[in-house]
Length: 173
Image (cartoon, rainbow, N blue to C red; front, side):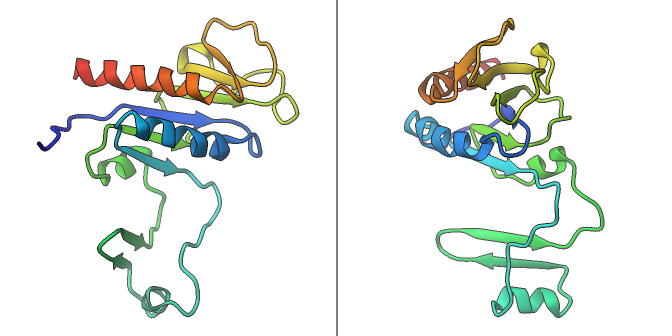
């Protein structure tokens, strides 16, 4: 039976650089997959990045002037598109196939609900987001705030919170 997709919930993970956003997402995604969710992840990179490299055919096509290069196989597909200006998060989301949940890393200024990663050694004493913007905070210290706080090791609890949020969101759509 084919799933019927509507608008997917979006949760963005924010933190100072070096706090562990990628590591937490890396541990979280398998737990959400075990619950049957189809997940997309969008990583925001504030710097220039290169996913192709010299010697590969796709790199050679781009170097010869192609504006879009697609690489396709039975298992995956990738598009490399030259841009004059950065796409908005909404424009990136619009290009995704239907999924149950979209997780983003970065996009601190987006209007989407956030999970903030707060590590005492890397973060200032104040959070990056206002409590009303956050679903939860993962931290290595005790914070006196009105939203759920999880230890940096409480990935299972975070997965349950996100799963419940996703199911409630989908039920409302």
